[in-house]
Image (cartoon, rainbow, N blue to C red; front, side, top):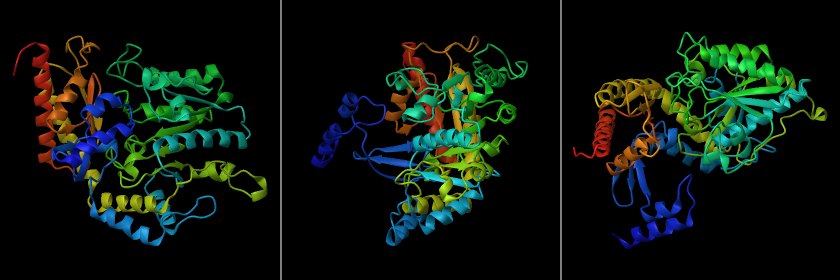
Length: 458
C-alpha cells in the first residue's frame, strides 16, 4: 500500500462523519478517490456501484461534464452574491425555469443550502403566514411516526423517529405531534386496504379537531417515506389529506427532499400522486451533488396574501441563510435540469426502477424471505421477512439487512440498508445491464446471508 494511501486512512481520525462510530470506521475507512457515471473508486483502486445515488442525491450520475462546465463558467462570472441585498443573474434564470416544473401554483421559490434548512424554512413560513393572516394561534405541526425531515432541531422536532437518532437530543420544540403513517404492509391499526376506509388519513382530521383547528398550522409529510422503509401510500391517501388540510386551513407541507427531481417518475411526487401541497421542500437531487442546493416552493397566493407589501409594513419573510441562492449552486441546479430534460433521464429512471422491481419480486420470493417489493419510479425497496406465512420480521439480534449490507460492500455495491429492508435508488443514467449487475450481486449476498444464518455454506 502506497505511503500516501496509508496516511490518508490515518487522517480520517480528524473527521466526524454522519451517524457513524468513528472508532470502527477509522479501522477500515472507505475513502473515495474519484467517481464517474454510477461508479465510485476508492483510494485502493476498488470499484463500487453507487446503487443509492450517494444518498438519493446524484440523479444524473457522477462526473457529468455539462454540469461541471456550467459551474466553471459561473465561477468566472461571480461565485457569491449576498442574498441580504442582491441576487445573481443565474439565480433569477434558475428560479424562472424551476417555477415551470414545480406543481401548478407553486412558483415562488426560497433557495437554501440543504434539506434541513428547507424544513426549517417551511416551518417558519407556516407560522409567520398564519400570524400575518389573522390566525396567530396556529402554531402546531402534525407529522408522521417514522418520518424524517432533517437534523436541525426544528426538523428533528417535526420528525417522528424513535431511537438514538432522535432521543439523545431531547427535549424538542413545543407544538409538534405525530400520527401513524399509511403503512399498508404493516398497518399500525391492524386493518387491510381498502376496507380500512383510510383510517390513517382520518386520524389527521381527528387530531386536528382534538387539538383545535385554530391551533394547527401545518401537516408535514414525505409523499414516500424513506426511514419508514420506502412507504408508498395508497393512491387516494394524499388527495384525502389535501381535502382535510384545506377544510381546516392547515398548510400541507410536502418533504420532497428525496422524492423530488425525477425520483418517482415525475419531476415531483406531488405530480406522481396528483396532489399539490402548499409548501414543497426540495434538496438532494436538486443539485445532484454538484453543489449544495435546496429550497422551498411556495404557493404563490400565500406569499402575495401575507408577505407582499410596502417596506413600512415589515411583513417580509423574516428568514434567511448566507448561501441561499448561491450563484454556483444555481448554475449547477439549472444545468442539472437541462441534463435531465435533454437526456430523458426521468423516463430512463422509470424504466430502470420497473426492471429492478420485477427482478427483485421474482428472485427474492424464490429465496423464501420476501415480504414486499415497493416503490415508484427509480426508488425501490425490498422488505425481508423470516416467515412468509405470518410475515414475521427477522429478530433485532439477527439484523438481516445490516448483515447483507456488509456482504454488499465487500462485493462493491452500495445500497441503503436497514435491518429489515434495503432500498435501491441508482442514478437515472443506469442501463438495464447495470441494473442487472446490481440485482445479481444483491441476490447473491442475500442468498449467502440466508445460508449463513442456517449454518450452511453456499
